Every structure is written in C-alpha cells, then in structure tokens.
Amino acid sequence: ATEAEGLKLHLSSSNVTSYKGVYKHPSGRFQAEHYVRGRQVHLGIFDTAVEAAVAYARTVGEYQPPAQPAQPPPTGAPE
Image 1 (cartoon, rainbow, N blue to C red):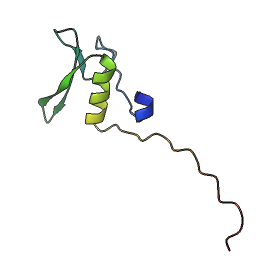
Image 2 (image 1 turned 180 degrees about the horizontal axis):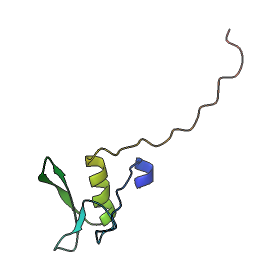
Image 3 (image 1 turned 30 degrees about the vertical axis):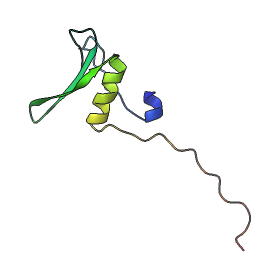
Image 4 (image 1 turned 135 degrees about the horizontal axis):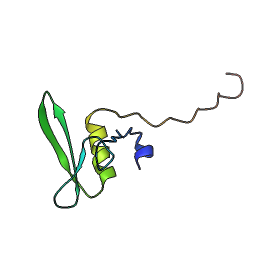
C-alpha cells in the first residue's frame, strides 16, 4: 500500500515500532505523533504500525508521487 501511495516511511532504530513518530499505545494499537514548533501534535491511533507510519509520512510532507510510465512518442507524421 505504501509503495502505491508513493510514501517514504521514516525508519527509527531507537523506537520499538521501527518507525519515527510511531509509538505503542497502552490499548495495544499504535499512536502517531510529531512535533511542530516544540508542540506535540497527535495524529491518531491506528491498528498497525505501518498505518501509523503512513499517517506520519503524509503529515510531515514526504509524499512522492509514484513514477508514471513513460508514454511512447506519437507515431506517424503530423498532417
């Protein structure tokens, strides 16, 4: 799903979920958050760490549109 959406997920070696901005919630689900000007912004609680990481990636603006296949040049001479 993330490749199709063109998202770059932020990995973290210091986080138990392996994703930056994603934390295990006491409910057993996954919480996404980030900081803006030193203030914590809660992004939501998700069923999987990947869903939370996608929310984080969308929020911090790391969207990269999927590559479009190259269109073949038109054939034949213009009339």
